[in-house]
Length: 636
Image (tube, rainbow, N blue to C red; front, top):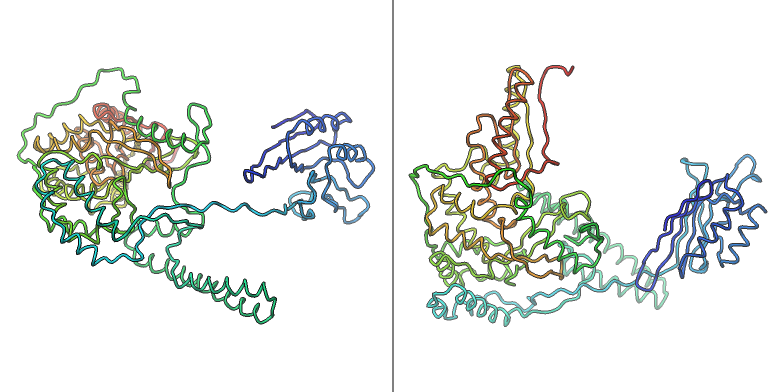
């Protein structure tokens, strides 16, 4: 509740939920010195209207508690069973102590639950800072329950041996991808369950990668010594506890330091991993979590189940962003009539290729919707390479992907800004691990075709070897610098697209794949890869229901970025001015001898680019698209 009465007082009341059984009503109040006598009954009327069990009123009330002028106010406080906790003057007068006043007050109906109030001098105001602490025990947090496999008795050699000896020939006689996948998944899981059964674990606190069993033993010895010292209250026992406590503190500091120093040193040439390790130094970094609330259609939503569904519906609806916008012209696909001198068809994978791809898996990654963890897949690479090679090749020959491989867990990643705004989140897909292995193998063949035939635009720096944000920035800066050296003016437009990956039109993408030389059979496989995809939003152990995805390429996949690069590959076609891209981030820049001409050329190029966006069903993000002028001439 928020109330303000002109020339009397201002009041703000908040209900703080500490736990299910503890609510505290916190009231901030200010009474102007010029307020007349009616302010007191009005204030008391408002306070009496609040519903509370425990209340704390704090503020500058301009009634000197040390003088008779506050007697009426004290009487009202007695009627409401309110006790004043501040004893020292809050507006001291060092020269004339008798003129010091106590006008900043803390009132509560539960004085026994609070420690004596403290008064602190400061240089900001002539009023002192007042503070109070409540005597309470924080409620115990419920342990986090995680489900994972028990690897204490896991023997990798025995596990791999049983998989190697299993007769996979029955599976290799199956000509249906769905049936073959189900057979492999069921038999692999049965064997895995015998060697690493699933268990439920209670986890308290954070998951610290630097924590070890040796450190756990040291902490246990310290806790035992602490319990013994408290029980005996013996000086020697307390001395022993302090030694162990100090040893644990030193050990934790050294282990953390060694861990982060080792990992940062090993990843100096890998910026992505390096900064991921640096970010993990933040003590509050606990992974992706749901915000406390989100806004949908002006409604504030706090229920976690409903929030997950809202996230999923929002991400799925991004695919129809182009259709939701009214267009002045009718959409028609451009047709490419160029004769191709190259073509692409899939080559069947070899067992060694599959085995090598399995061994490159990151064992620390978690499982996707198929519940297969990379750790066990990698460990059994040589034993399961043969049946998986058959399954992957069966997928290529039949243009069919197991339905389970087209499902994804989506994590809502906050890009920045207001966490209650759904538009500020990016969906990151967690796909089945074997689907990513297959995507990786196909990506190798497709990239080799693109590179050998020089198909990719030289203006694109995203998702390509020997290209990066650095090379893209250097190229643009060099072009602009050359223009300025030639005494020319340069106009640039930094273009951003709305939900670019999520709005990729599947029909347009298939035509793009045909236009660069992919065979109809290969296009058919990609068509199956893109169709009937489903996703749910999963955060920690909670997830929404699965929804169908009708557009876009999955973020977090291996083929997604490559397909998007092909999708916008002709973006610079026909544009005579400079343009450079990093994924969907585009900069268009022109130069001329006059500012007016440079801007005119930029507008003309942008109009042409807008037409290409229209044909690709991509939507410009006008809020993030910025214009900039570069010139050596002084502004007039």
